[in-house]
Length: 244
Ligand SMILES: NC(=O)c1ccc[n+]([C@@H]2O[C@H](COP(=O)([O-])OP(=O)(O)OC[C@H]3O[C@@H](n4cnc5c(N)ncnc54)[C@H](OP(=O)(O)O)[C@@H]3O)[C@@H](O)[C@H]2O)c1
Image 1 (tube, rainbow, N blue to C red):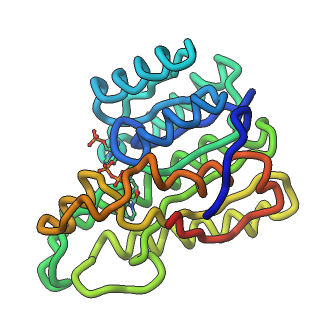
Image 2: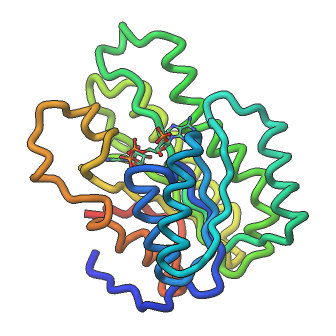
């Protein structure tokens, strides 16, 4: 997408990003802060989140909030608690980016082990459900809140050997579509972004032999996310975008 974000695009917006400690989520969190947003960094590795928060402080003196949470083993109670904590701190949300995902193991369907299936579904689908459900009141209290789900090219066309990850991304797109339909009469919007092949550790796990220099970096694929988070996309909901 050829979108040039104005430097004040996200002024006065509060945006929560999952998987904000590395890869695309990290790059997006830093860019959102650079464009004026207060960012809430959610992830499972505190040291990575703290490094992103430090980067943001050096960039614009903002203090990014950190939520340390492993989506794979969090109970519903944990989501309820952090939603309550945000509410008590009078946080409202103008943006929510479901970015954290696990790849699981690629291979023949017949070899998918149930533990991997559960783990990938827990992080990629169940966590997206629980976060959205419990943060919906904060999104409703926000201004023109934009929720972005992260999909993949295997999230709408099944591909051999992509097993659980592929099924989880189909579910992700379904969740986005039904939320967009359910809230069509509101100012909230729900869309999905497929980043396309991007130079991150997840991509390296999926394609260990490829030449990474041919891939775009996370910083180079952010325009679509920014377009959807800012007010230039107020009428856009229920759609899937390719970031490349
Ligand atoms: N890169 C690509 O080519 C590509 C292509 C299509 C779609 N995508 C999608 O883009 C999104 C970002 O991927 P990426 O390539 O940036 O991946 P990445 O570099 O592996 O980063 C994923 C982030 O999610 C976090 N995370 C993973 N499991 C988690 C859990 N259980 N609880 C909390 N946080 C968790 C990771 O935390 P740690 O750092 O602590 O591990 C990491 O910060 C994903 O949804 C992925 O499916 C990526």
